[in-house]
Image 1 (cartoon, rainbow, N blue to C red):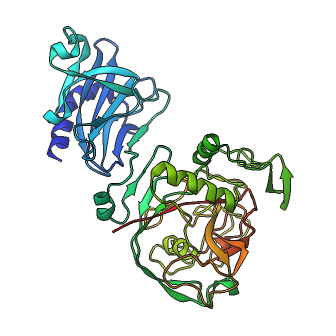
Image 2 (image 1 turned 45 degrees about the horizontal axis):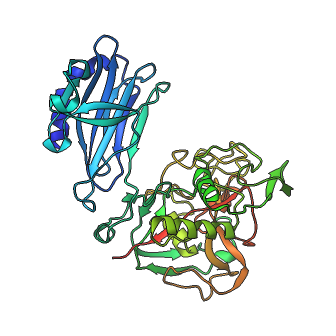
Image 3 (image 1 turned 180 degrees about the vertical axis):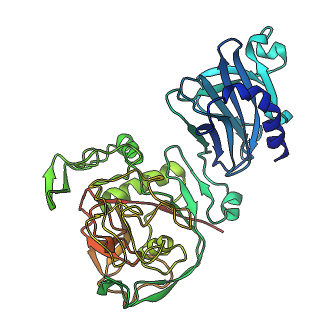
Length: 432
């Protein structure tokens, strides 16, 4: 903390010329890695050439504003590195667009180096070269989040705390550690618009630790899997058009009938597609990844709450992506977006740091369908008995009436179904 404060104060004189624009925008670095990182920033001055300043030391989940004000038209570059104890003496870094001379982070403290003042190469001047990454020059603000995509060590896994995040391979989902605990599954008899299959309510105790992807699997993540494996995704998908569902040829996750970016949730994926993805990502990460059980899904969607929605007793389209023409008791009518939205930051995270329960896409879970909870497992495990020709789908979607976004709402679907409103998220057991 002292290093970070000292660096910030010492760099103020250097950075003042970069921040004449009102501080409505900024260049920010955030550390989502499982170790401290050191960050430096380079700026090209029209008269003085490249000036490099650092180090900001960011602990896990820290952020630092490196430059305030709009970034448009500025030439900025950023660098970060951190020492992973698993690899003695190995410092890791990110994309390199240009080399700059800097001090060694392990020496501590801040530095400001005007590159044009150098005499000879970096080594001759007593410095080292590091590869800096270009910051987009056409944006007002930019946040660079750093991660270390490595499998958790045994110690890291045992020490992981609820709400902590990790990635275990390049392109792997962002995972969030969940607390263990107990909750009441299902809906009470007096919950508005409940259905018979949501009862009877029953206690579920989850004793084994697990992590859950912060968001559903994205289109980019799924496409990486398809490109790597050649997995066949089919050429038909159920799509909604003019208020009706039809199965259309030529539709797939690449073209679900509406425009998507890579940060949208993947759709037009079957239960079987999801299982194939999980087998592949488990191999990439060297750990077991799986679907959530139905009990786990409701547990993390509720996040310690007992109301119909984790945020309260009713719902409005500003809170979630669903068919805004429908009105839940106490709620309001509003926008029907008629498509997915990005998985991050479209709506609020729940108390357990997940984007879940906001519609957008319904999600496959592991369980076979059962018409009610008579005989359901009480330990959070998947219910593998029952009507296994149908699998449970949770969460509601962009096409759903608001009642289907309740934490207790559930539906059944054939595992081969590909629909433009169904995706999935992943879970990972955590050893303690």
